[in-house]
Image 1 (cartoon, rainbow, N blue to C red):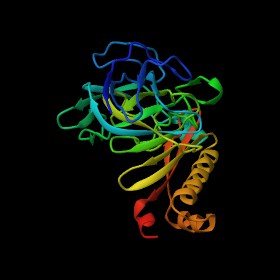
Image 2: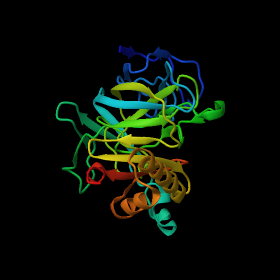
Image 3: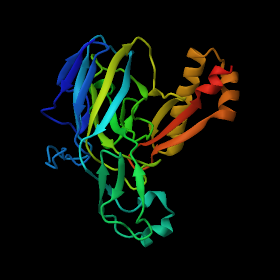
Image 4: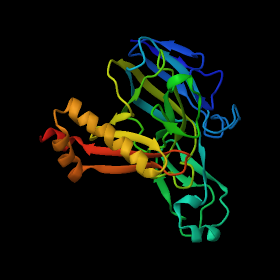
Length: 302
């Protein structure tokens, strides 16, 4: 299995069946540098327009429709000393009568300490003078080409992945995407240094990273993305309204528990009914993201 250092010559604001920028073998590792959600690189030079320009696509040999693409996020290293966020929560996360009271949402700059692995506001806000965050890197937008030759904006998400903005999609996490096109056609971009649940200001701390992933083909059909951390398994649903995203994620978890863990739907329902955790990936993008998460400790105790 080889390691490829991939330097993009073009970036994409859609996920789709585009000409591959790189061909790799099943199980190969790719190291690449991303630009931020507005298209600026590690030197602060704009290389593309937003939203969320992505590297790729990467063609993985042997991947066919009906397979799964396994993506192991092996590492994320920040490559810039600044990031940006919006400054005020989005109108859709507060009561309608409170929208008119929100101040204008400006661009806020954050200083990133790449040695201490922390971030702080460049211009402190009253009450947050000592507000320092540990970095918790994540990939905001990644996935594979959708079905039927579609090209879908990086502003949103679907079964194929896309702009999910789920904070657990960082180093040490493995995620599987359903393959709909030959070679899977894998894209990634839009990395965040930190982000809370829901991406409720419309951004994480948007910056640039060197990202290392290993891409492998599994001959297994899934419907929605599945993921695994050291402690949990999770499934992801992307849709609007939010309850539909929850339904997609829960249905995929039921499929996983019955196909791989030997539970029937009654047993899986008892388990989920008492131990499931739901995480909000984002409630800002055109499609919302919900994750259905189960601790591996409960699966080991069965």
